[in-house]
Length: 257
Length: 266
Image (cartoon, rainbow over all chains, first blue to last red; front, side):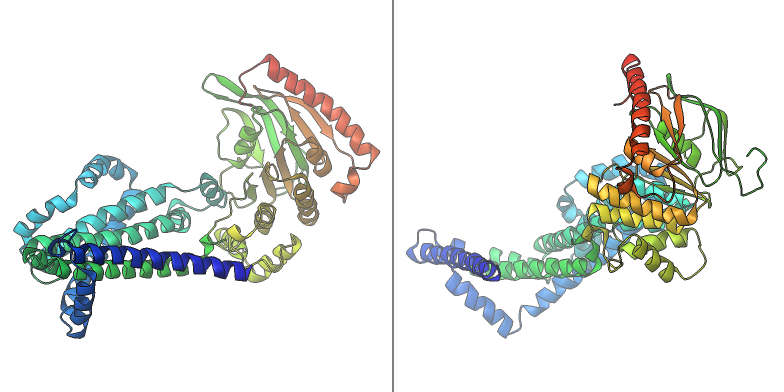
């Protein structure tokens, strides 16, 4: 059983390595032979060492820190606002009914299209990036939380009422715990989208940050520079969602069988 | 029975009728019980037995007639009543013991909650599962926790809405035995809604058979089997099978009335 699982895991790992090095090799080959010009697609044997140099000389830490701090700020502000709004809208159903179509409309709007406006309103600095991130985070978490709070099992409500609990106790003891998994799903998804919002603003506004770096390299036709930063972005995004999953796993042990 | 001391009264249902819009659900229901009686309500689907239970719990207000539970009109959440659902209704984010504690806290029951909870879990055969979440328990075990939670309230009146309806025959038997042994100690007044005639006879002091919609009382049969009972031992007794045959005839009549008056939700 254990041996079978180990060999299965080994096969999966081997398959992934083949895929990674296969695609990397083909990429390298395409660039070297000139099937696709290296100036357009970059070249792994150049941008990977370049990436390493960015870490060694420390030039990448500033942009990472800048993007991460904007993301963290937007995540927190958007998250708090979304949870507060969800609390209010769940507690006052009539209010929710009033604002629902407007929320739907705003949610349907592709918010990255607003980034140029944010830049006009809030300038080229941190504020625009954070607002851009917040505009994505807020709606993702708000919609998830509202849906979660609505999914209360009628039996749970019936039980609470049969025990004589009032509506505020039902809200605290039944509605909020019911919504927790949906809130976490919203936080997880929201974090990745917050990063997207921040990087989009950086791409457009320039300044510091990883998005600005991508924009700089692509404006100077440095495909290898673009790919080096993209690798960093993938790593950052992956690290953030792994972190969220770890926290979620700890807080929601009851979900696992 | 009619001039009982306060706190010594059972359930009194007089001429209760109820309709949803144009559809008559209950028609002239009359049930009077002494305190501590175990009543089973049985009848075809859509006969209004759950509506009647909801009325006794105070979830639904009856439209005509009179209902008194323990001498008072029913109100949802009353401290001397407890309700058990067809599904376990356990809170998935709470462990088995925390689910029982939820009820104890909600009712502000005095005493050491840990001790009460541990004892009840032992009573339903779940020692060692106190810290398991519902997702880690089988359906039968979850319903045992729900049973323990219901009895933790030590209510004078228990309303059980097909509590074992979703279980397989073997598990059902175990749960029925547990229910009886818990009830032998508390002797609360119980109203059990069930589809299962065998269950009704094995558990109750009295089986009330209702007709299809509109629900009327077709038969009200005392079950004089001695207590304490063993559900599995009863299956082998003559008296049990005689009662079964007698009540089966009533149920057939009730079901036939369902065919004559279609429109039930069966």
